[in-house]
Image 1: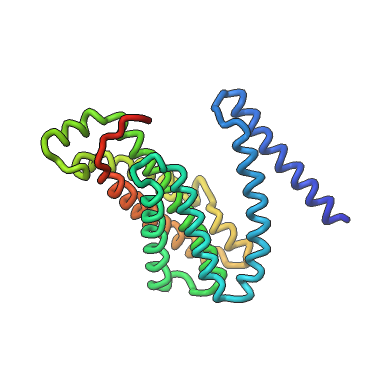
Image 2: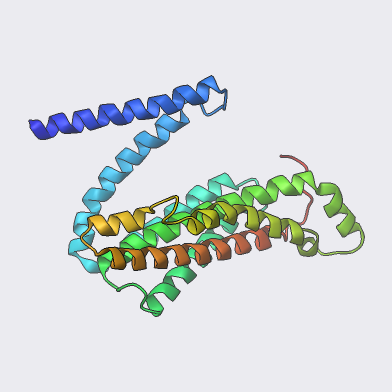
Length: 248
């Protein structure tokens, strides 16, 4: 009974915290509606399901491969929805997420920076794939928005005989840079401004502060690689669009 009461209390507190977010956004007329509440409720449901799945995955190591594929699929689908306004946006999102996250994970485990066991694979893969998804979304949306704002410049390049890739090249560079800056700033301030989740989680899991720091550094470096490659792939592919973006 005490356990049930604690869950109810936790749920009420979480709803109150999210309710403040919704109220603040409505007061400021940000235009989010009930979206903050929807995403928190959805996250709660998904984490509950994942918590149950992980019990089986951690007990049967070979199932981790299927779980990583599920994460990659979900990340690609989510990012694809966000940048579907791009030419072949969904395909571009898939290519970007798979390239960025896949390459980073292969390098991390090939260099033996993290032990190849089920717990570490799930933890590192989840963080890297999630950030790769963010990079695909941010770089794709930045690319589309900047292409719209600078369409006269693009038309000028095309009129001079430049290929679409060349006409969009500088816009792609800017889109990737803007997508990476928040994460790189957070990485730069790690330990001074923020204590990242991987570090705190490793500490709570019983690791020493030194081991937790090593794990976090690997994650940060892997995320930087994944996001950079994802952003490059997304913007390079988007830059081959055969037309000039004319709507926001």
